[in-house]
Image (cartoon, helix red, strand yellow):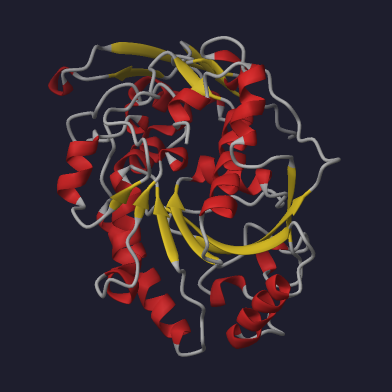
Length: 364
């Protein structure tokens, strides 16, 4: 199988052959409605709480759900198959805290460093105590569902970033991993969105082998991070292409029906888009099950992306922090605020950013 790092640099003609390695013809993915609230357009993303039975519809039990999935595959037409993907985002990590602390306007500056003297967020930041706790709470949640005949994942995949692998461990270890029921597998395709921030740079394979000695690696897993570049950002189109790659992979190489994948918010959005799911942002540590249908279709051709060039249309130049940030709703008293970033104690270069405020007139 071609590695992801090589695949992203393929030319258009080679891409067709690469996809044919998974399938002799194209396939269409879609979400099967009627099982989960998160897949229902009437569900409010902002108020949805995955702790409520992982979003299973109120008119279903887990026993009924499992039986209906088995029936779908048993009665599927030729070329049609179904899988349940338990997609989980990693728990809160230190780059999440730093981003919230500095705000997007200044995070674009700080993200290219490894830390600020108080927090370390690169490369490959660890979970915060809050992130660990959330993953442990997920384990408690899953254990509470098992008594209701919740169908456990039969296969476990993870991004090769420690915040994802640790989240998977804290959630599933004593449920499914400690007994040898399943062995997690690192997949490079599930990695963080590729960009200029150091939190998007992964550790090498030797580090992962030492930290997770019982885990497996997919074939051709690169020893070093060959994808990261401080000079460009991966686009949404690139994430959706990677999502499609992952779906092709698990549908054609994984025999299991119920599959767990623990990764990141960005690639999660790419997978949802590739599967035809509505936009649905996940908070840190959230888990949502998806019922995905794959239809082999000779007459279906997915949107073809031009992959000529390096890094090509899947990327945009990494944008450094702007020198001026304009607001429209802050009071006039803040109209000349000057922030000095990178105090000498952090060892970072000192950068002064002037925030220009345009006050919004208010009626008397």
